[in-house]
Image (cartoon, rainbow, N blue to C red):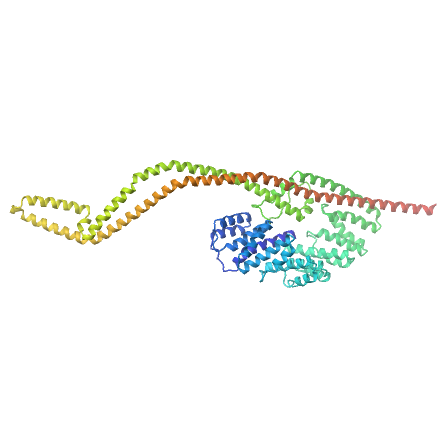
Length: 619
């Protein structure tokens, strides 16, 4: 049941985090940071999910998913047992007017939190605020919660009526819980019938088969307590011989046969049970039950041997328990559990799958079955994770401090060279030259002066023309140079015509070039301003980062001894819980041993009385 409860709780947390998104068309996650948190969430990395989510909320990176993110955060807090913080989140969502579907889920989880904290009236008020239907996986739980609240007020009839609403189509776990609730509400017949239905149901996997065994076992022992061994045997026959509850079922089946005055039939299950590992309480009781049945059959010699063997087993098992207690107090249990059940992160849904190497690991079954031990161990494991996480951050903060020092040093070293290159660039002079060129172009464009846009070759040609003209002017009266003058005139005309023809194209290219120069100068000026801003702000930014790193380092340094102290105290608490269970087993063994010794004494008394009775006629 513990694992099943965790599975259902995990499904509930998934529902509050993802149901809102699931009700919309697919691919609606528009904020990448929210999608990143959901990815870690569905990978069961809940600590990473909640920390990333809170960072994204702090920097307002979740547009369009604010309410969904709050629900997910509240659900994760609830999964870690942070009921007060989760309740505050849900209450805030309700107060600010979240959408109906979100509001109903918030009311439900607020009611659940209040119920867990014993605030029954407040829980009833919250559950009464749910206006619509919740998703199917939550609706059954809502009805069960409402019924539990009614039973807490003693209104069993109303609770039974409420529970009847989810009987049809309910899952196997829900029907099992309903049966138990009906019996507690006083409707034993209906509750028994419902548990009987669960005990006969088809089970698809090991988890549900175990639940079915539990229902049959509960019915069987209830029938034994009601002095109906025949019906008890019928229920107990359904329990699997290879299941986790097989030992208890065999023990109960034997007592059912004994109740029917069939000690020989009782020997069959008890003998099978007594041969199993003695770490189970049912096996230890069978060690007494077998010689009891033999004595009922009149086989006093065999019964005497059986009781003596049981006493030896009890003494040996007591010694084994002492060894296990010593190993637990030496820290081997918790260290072994952590080593054999590694987890990437802390988490409320993490469960123990593998037993550690211990002197007698069979003793751990009863220890690990305790809900109190499981929760206390998770708290200790989470503290160990937090200690490791804080130490990792201690190392990371040292690395960040070194990185910041390197950045500060690099900034100081590169700044003079950057300033020198900026001075060499001469942005002011370039801007003045750009202004002159722009003015020159404007004048040329205004006059449509092709000469103003002449290229280098054409300017050289004009210089040669001027030189030739000067020569011809010095020899103005020379008739032999008339042909040269005509050729020069034609060249001047051709060049003027070429400049006039090329003016539009060259004017466009010049304008384009001036714009490119203007863009380049603007970019250079912006870089200059950014450089000036960096010179003013970067040292202060370095100082802020340094102060933040120092503050975080102080917080980590303050938290480390506190977490270590809490972890040590929690470890001692968990170990004492385990030791207390083993001590209870020792007390039970002592009780069994006393029973066996008393039975041995009774057998000797019977033998003595028989001998005296035989001697009496002879005298």
